[in-house]
View 1: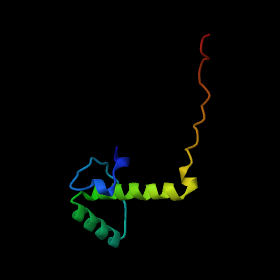
View 2: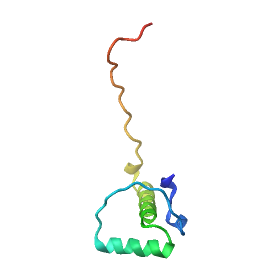
View 3: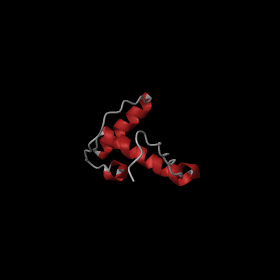
View 4: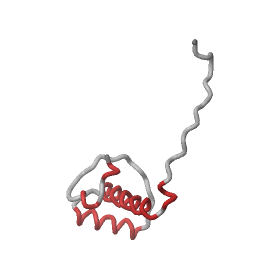
Length: 84
């Protein structure tokens, strides 16, 4: 859903979001304000789109970033063994 959001999709759109408190330098905050104003979108949608595009570039350029997550190990069953 939101992982599909890109900067080109932001013209005047509002997207649902969850709260995340992130500290960024003032210059970055001002730049995000300008981009979101220019695109007519919310700051949240702009930040999500920028993060998604950055992750796309990372995945294209870094082979180790494409690794699949480790498989979860099955925990041994607790309690009685199942009836056969």
